[in-house]
Image 1 (cartoon, rainbow, N blue to C red):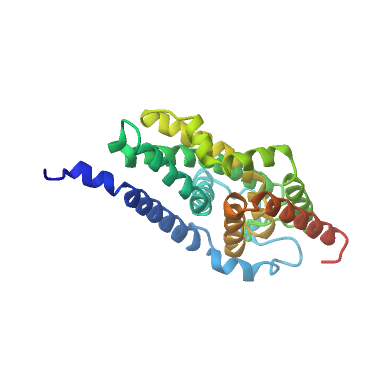
Image 2 (cartoon, helix red, strand yellow; image 1 turned 90 degrees about the vertical axis):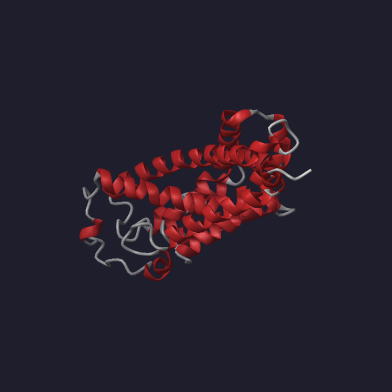
Length: 272
């Protein structure tokens, strides 16, 4: 009997899902690297840090009150697309696992669509985070605590306190609980299994909440190194992936947290 188009698509669903995730990651990464509509592209940011106006008065771009709805929307897209580029590599194995589990169900032919709904639910959580990050950035710029041109904290003391707080967060029960859920996706996906596109979306949202609970404070470090700092973006993405998938992820998480605390303390003490 000749194989139907649906059956051939089902056999290739893993490639379809992986290919679409790869394409989404590539588009998000290219948009982020290009500068996400900002004045400075991400690769240029590391070399510009520390070259701000020594008077502390800032440039015209640093003046408060420059925000508009259009600018806020652009900053929101910057945050959201950047989060997509940073988080997709670490969530891709979960999506592929979800696809594998879906092939065993009654709606096996709908695996690509259900995976798309799962990813949309996951990214919806990071859209909410991006909206909150945009509001925080706006408030910090209005208060003169973040440079509008460099998109980083204007005070090294404030940066040190963020480093210490982010490091301390690595040892909290919330961090460890969410990290445990992220490191056991098979158990979570099986226990919270839901059918249909709506169910897939809700599962994506639930996994997104665990991921957000695990990583939200780490993303605050972008205010220290510069929100569009390419080195920090890549470094944080690798950090998140290492915590979730390396054999000693929880230990890596705490070791990195201790390093952040020491780094912040050294800045406060004037050693760095």
